[in-house]
Image: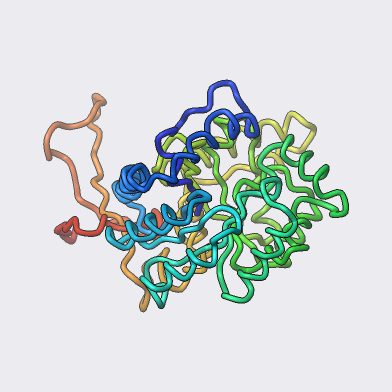
Length: 358
């Protein structure tokens, strides 16, 4: 539900920086290169191929401020058969990008445009207002960032003093809708959670990048308890992997850390234990949860009658009593893991597999 195709060359690169310094030091200089279509084609081809290689058939991509290279990313997704939401950062030329994508896929069956204000501090009030109007006029989904870093939250308060919160900034410009996906959401307060729930917006939990940049741990259990839809994002390049399974594993791990911190802060054992996410819950976030955030819950994310065949063929390996992994095919089974049990993903398009019943 959240990644940056343009940032693939910087995957896992963060040094000693936190979010705002990281953007200035690594991200903005890298993204300035996407005025070159030859550079964009090399990177975007690799980005889509990489996500497909990890079994991802539905992906929400952040591009850059460059309209032509954003169009190219959408074209590559169509060429490779990946279902995608492709968004150009900022407002200028966004309508032209929307028109381009719709000219290639009028019904939005595979690729859809998505309104993409990077985050509130990078946009003027006029741009946010225009993006909100465009989303409403063209019935478009929206993706952006919210409350990833405490310094970012402070900056938003300074830039938008008349708004009561970060979430209220987006809401005041009609950018909180049932089709909005908000990445990170680590430092939301109670009022913001209630507002996001009221508007029906979803959250993309990005545990890998949250950890890498030292941004904090998203209290996913609190979001779920508020009735907010939550999916998982890899958030390359802050996140060091394109694999949604890696994100699911990390989501489980950081929830256990948060549980420990909560218990140390005076919460009861029952309350702190409740912060942990089970493996099944993390796999749900990677499948049905993500599909719901992107408005695809009636098409993909589960094996149900009438839904599209989004699945991943998994090769399960048995481990002998003495440990290690068997060589060759001995003791190994081919299994089909349901999308509702594993992820909202598929066998990469063009890669035919023979699946045998067990």
